[in-house]
Image (spheres, helix red, strand yellow):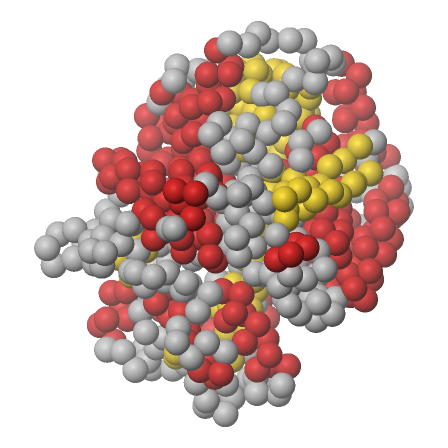
Length: 564
């Protein structure tokens, strides 16, 4: 099967759909492809809200304060220009969402209401109860379907990006999960909007598809990655039962008055951040919970308590309906009367493809990136509520500039040998009658990332992780797959395993290289922040399948923004 389009958008979450909408509005032909059904991507799981300095609740709020909070939370290694763009354009994005039909919760005066989130100076997070991501996805899906120039393919996996003799993007190879058939897409530009990589960890808030395959695609095509060591662990994921472990317990619970207690009933955050308490930054709260559990003050299931039952029942039902349903359905807990059992869980990748702030273009001509797959905005740690605004601001920009690039470009023929080699790689496991199952190797990777490249790191654990990753890599050629190609879960595991390896290695290598603690990256052997040596970004590149790392100084914030 062969397709042809001006702009190929890989990923059907908020960033991908917003990019497709903008490219279509710029009169480019667009193909939108994703692993899941349209509207089912991971963005629906972003519950708490979306940030914009509207000043509806705290009139003193403005884009400058949003900029400042984001830079501080990122520990000053963010790309300042990306942060400025996001903070300035956020209010316009909120109005755009309303025009698309999003129904935000309101103040008594009819304005969009805003709640408190950790690390914010003011109440800035706009929301639809605790279903904000779902509402955004629904209106985005309607806008995509309304534009007849957007084709979309569901349940497909893009496995390789193709370039021509001038190292310009000219297509992609993928497989259909539904049919098991290989296909190619000839295009002028590609926007990667594949989301994050938290599924490389044993316990995570993320949907099944976020295994980091976008990072592997980018590296293979010659793009650079930045800040890969910066992985955010959300302080509160479900703990019990085991089948629900890691599922997100939104920051909205703490934003609406929830408190954290250890097994002794102590409100322990006063020991770690007496001023901000439960609304401290995510890295601080995660390490505080981790420490309480390690010191023997955790619950029997290895968590701590999160309690909002002191608030009126009707208040909780209005503000946190999804959390009520989640704990009732999974844990048989009524959060209006009982405490929630929570623990940190892998949540978000601050690092990603290095892109130009203005256009979202990578160093490879024709390759753009937006959303969680792109690095730079969040630095060493992300503010809650900044993910949804990030995907829409830069989804829109990437769509606009990819379409402009495509209009000035010509189609070029796909290199047949590249396609044939990819076909051989993909179907190789079917030719083995016996061998190891990919899921076993995948689980080993997830275990080593959780145990050795997690909330607390040091040289010993990081060295171990790299050895484990290499051992898994050596076994990939031993994987066998049986049965037919269509809807073959074992085959999907094999494809994802190959993509996880360079992503895992990039994170572990960068974490070993950064000999300090900053934001989400905490090393027990280098527990202090070192601005003299490490106010720098780590860049990851690949050549002939081998990864290399380098450091670049953080770009200085201009004089007019330093005062902010």
